[in-house]
Amino acid sequence: MGLVKIDDELHEQVRRASTVMCRSINAQAEFWMKIGRLAEANPTLSFNDIVQRELALASEAEGEGDARAAA
Image 1 (spheres, rainbow, N blue to C red):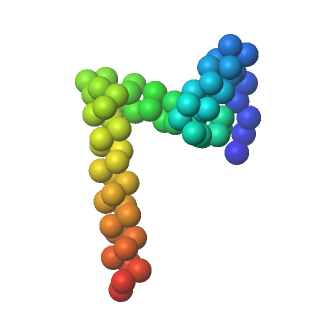
Image 2 (cartoon, helix red, strand yellow; image 1 turned 60 degrees about the vertical axis):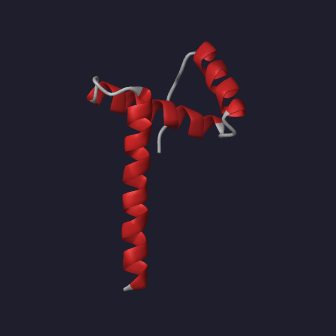
Image 3 (spheres, rainbow, N blue to C red; image 1 turned 180 degrees about the vertical axis):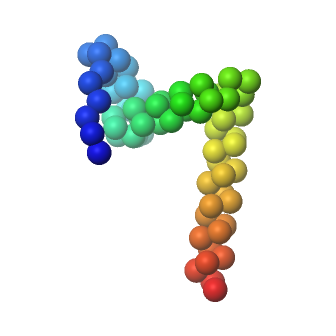
């Protein structure tokens, strides 16, 4: 784990967003970084498309974990 230096104004935006989204400041920044990385890698996908895809992947991974636990 490392530290990331960000502009004070961006930090304030992250702080405000984290309050609204009921996330920690770190979790909000991580969410934005992950979505931004996925958006750059998939420029034809909308924000909603990216979130839906990530939810589907998480559900698949959770299902695989359930299958392993039952075995």
